[in-house]
Length: 259
Image (cartoon, rainbow, N blue to C red; front, side, top):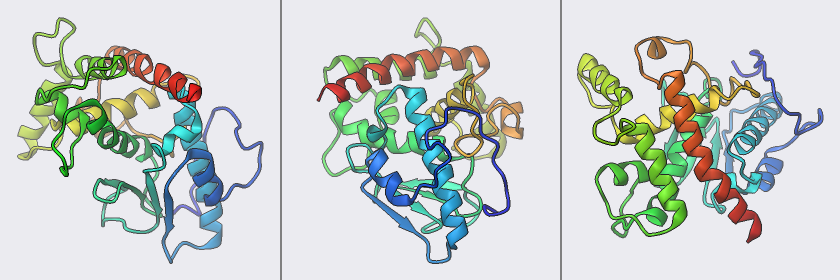
């Protein structure tokens, strides 16, 4: 349980040992709304606030984004210990633009679900999507939806190309082929969905970042049953995808600071 387990984090000290609140999280990272479950006890609330604050700060640090950008222009909602799904660590609900973390099992899934949130948020800003439809940028790119002409969108397209295709752009990457094989093995389409392929690639890059180790933010992309089965990009592919991600997020962060 959250109140009993200790998460060993290594990285910058953003709080200087101070206790933060969920209000601090909302203000620092520009979230729209935070919803706490009625069964979240005070000690759990305090510990979770510190863990989530550090995790979102780590994410901003790694992606070279101003912390306020994590809230996706105050459109992203966060739920802790509320609105969860049985047996699920965390999930993103596009209809409410809400990232929900389970009280006792949400650890390690935050980076994965943040990508889903970003993938959804940026879709209609990068692609000419249909009105009033729920779209994800990764799915739009793979379906050849027309991209809105902008230098940042071109960089986002490079992120997808690096993740999904071979370096010459002529075939699907081995990472994709392994995901298709996993779906065949389990008899369902899940691992090879573009949204899931991209979320796993994103979290794998975050966990492989050498200067930060945060098992509350991301865990088990290096050592787990799924990792052994080839469900995540290999180390060299992670390096390539990470370079593409920074090639996109760093100029995005600079543009946001200038505004």
